[in-house]
Image 1 (tube, rainbow, N blue to C red):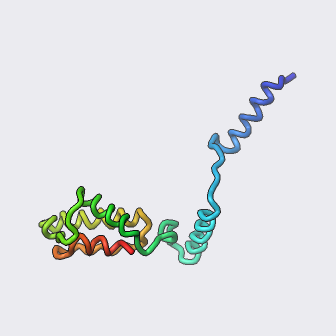
Image 2: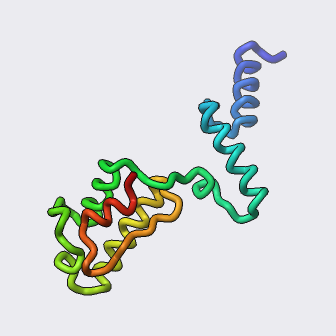
Image 3: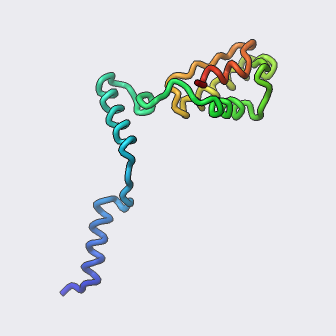
Amino acid sequence: MATKKSADKKATKKAAKKTNGAPKRSVSPELLEAAKTARARKKEIGHFTLMTALSVPCLPVDQATGIVFGCLGKPVRLDQTLGQLFPLATARGGFCRCVSTAARQAGVGDPQVPCQATTTVGEVIQSISC
């Protein structure tokens, strides 16, 4: 004859098994709707990813400035050119990849970061900001 205590243990074990031990999580209705839209677009186009489907065209200026200064490692004058900061093209390319990657991770769909030696830091910020 099973005791009440062992029956409770069995029920708890079954419940944990059903959810793989993870607690239930609630998801906002907005996020669910965005995911539905992304799935629909993925079916429609084929190779779209969720991140691409939820991308934005640009970032707020303060967020874009933070990304650019973060890739530079310090704040600099906005009129300073990339050629002054990075005389070598490979170093400039690394900076531009850093900005592009960070902007993409922040949600910008396809950031077009100018990377010429004559490009100013302000122009880089403008290229990813609204």
